[in-house]
Length: 99
Image 1 (cartoon, rainbow, N blue to C red):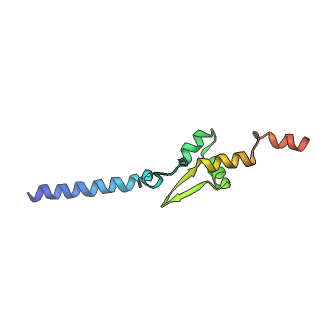
Image 2: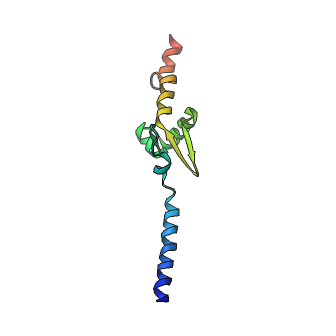
Image 3: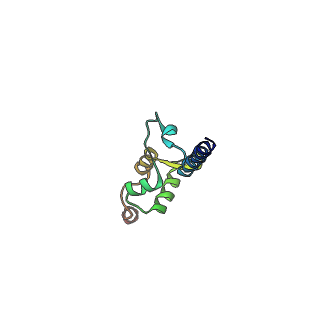
């Protein structure tokens, strides 16, 4: 009996360590919000840019939301930033200078 109890205690410790390594469940923090949130990797794929470029872009737009030790990006804030500051691609600045 003591052996079974010892094993189940060890299994519980291992399960706890697995959960801690996985990180917190962000869905419970973001549940009920009407905005869309993504990770840096998801946002970089969504906007077809490199990971670190997207991080700089999200910080510039002020779209980062820190939840404990994790960061999520508010897609609505990114879209508003694009609408406000960008009309085209990288060549749009050159057209403005030549006008």
